[in-house]
Image 1 (spheres, rainbow over the protein chains, first blue to last red):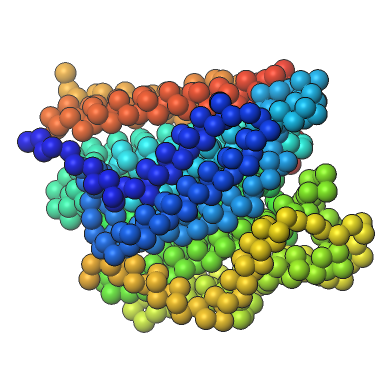
Image 2: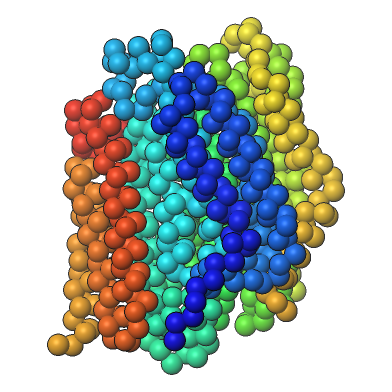
Length: 515
Length: 99
């Protein structure tokens, strides 16, 4: 019964290259002189991601290929998601490239002599780059995993480095360590739920592959209690990563406490990976159960929209406000996921899932730019994160104020920015002919977006009409400036011509559904 | 012996762990409860593998142990750093970030 394991290295190359780069990064950390480490680490990280992207381009036309003994499924959505994740990771690494944001020695007690001397003598540790690469490798594996064990390992490879990175802030280290502890404990808690759910899915189908589980669900002779326990617990583990209510408790604390550079990472690419995986699990594995998980998603999405938007209004801390706004945006994204199947009819599925995919990609782009701007303001020696820190930003730096304003308008869903089309396509999917009972949810979602517009536009007001608290201009390295401007322009351009990205999303989904 | 009993045991261990995470205050104990939950999942995997006579579940149990070991490394690193700066591992004390 045993076949010879064939690994198909070319299909796995993007993931393996990133892992290799991470290992080289660890070696550099051990053997290269402190002074030169930071720049070498940055080059290795960027180069690795670039090479990985090239190797991904070489396999871009695969529609459905299995690798590593059926554990990894390289198909349309997987390749598309991996490409997007690599692109986002490249941007993110460029923005976080400045090691001044990170503690010189994570193990030193905050405020101790040891820490001071490490900063003064420039003994800066740069473990953040290999950690980022490990996390990226996990994210690349996540959308491609096609059995429960690969899924679990990818989940952990993605999460563990992020827990550590959350605790690496140079300034306000106690906050940062606390964020790391909270992120870790809640993250580990949710992965335990995921694993227990996976055990019951295995107990239901006696198969660890998603295809096997799908077959068992259609067969319908096995124990349904096991199936429902499995579905519930596994979804819980995945939705924790997405950060939807009621699994959102970690989001505000981690966003606020983690160094902004890491928040940018946590708020971006993992959302893409988790979305891709949720879609693969629910659609590839458990599509016949759509009626059950759709009801579950309705509850989650209503909760996320409600709590996210209302709690965001009360925040004075910018990062915390953006965390609650993330929760609300994820609620909106879930609407796209839940409106695919109606009465067992999957005709509308491609449309709905691609709208959700479009939503999450554009959301991540916007997050990247907005946290990038916050990060730049922090360079002057203090951690900028109160909304009042943005006061009069337009007079200090029109460019960054402009980028931030574009992001906020896009998040609020103002046309012609990309956020508007994302919301529109999700609502279209929800209200498509053949969908039943979508109208109330659609009205609710639009009402909640209106509430959301209040707190986004309040920041625009602070940036443009309030008096600045300091007169210092915002200085940034040239490359970061280019990346942020590009990012802001992308939000605008994708808003004016959303067709290209929409088509890409739709194509990759259609390939996956195979209909 | 009826294999279903192992599933009941696994569910009980999982529940003890899940409740423990919520009610205990020491970060180390919370962490031990999470490990208990992972082991409960392991027991469920092995039991299902035994009922069905396939090896997949048993292999997964090994993977889980490795992953749990990695989690211990990362978790203890974070908890020890916090302990060194605060002299306390209570999760209630770690509340600078506003609720």
